[in-house]
Image (cartoon, rainbow, N blue to C red; front, top):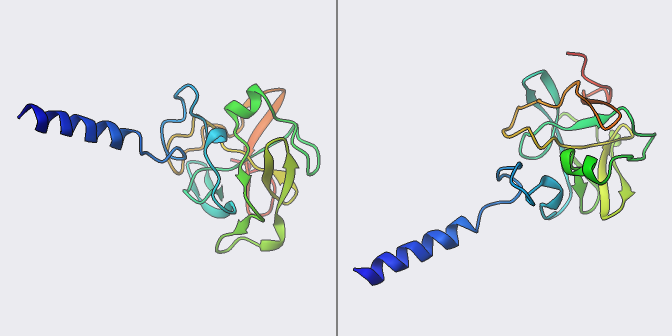
Length: 158
């Protein structure tokens, strides 16, 4: 019985370590979206958010633009990138259904390439825990405002 119990506990410990880091609790110290491994091109799709239709990643999490960024240039790094993880990509990002492929691209940044839409570098927000959350929309953080991105490439006005 002790061996069976020990095997069960060991099995649970293994399973606990096998979660997908891209979907785990993003507020856990040391576990941010920025640290999540990339495995292929980023997907930029149109999805539903708490503020209405906006761009989302492949798992339905909201994508944001930072008003403080320059054209095709990210100005968010360090603490900013820990709170607003850049949407990184391996290879050219892919446009989801209904998203114009000509607006999807990438820019080089320290640590790799970041997906862009209509020239805006794209980010996620660590306080968005579930698909459709839009907790970062309209926040003033790290010197400027953060907005959801509409299909037209502009900030969502809600």
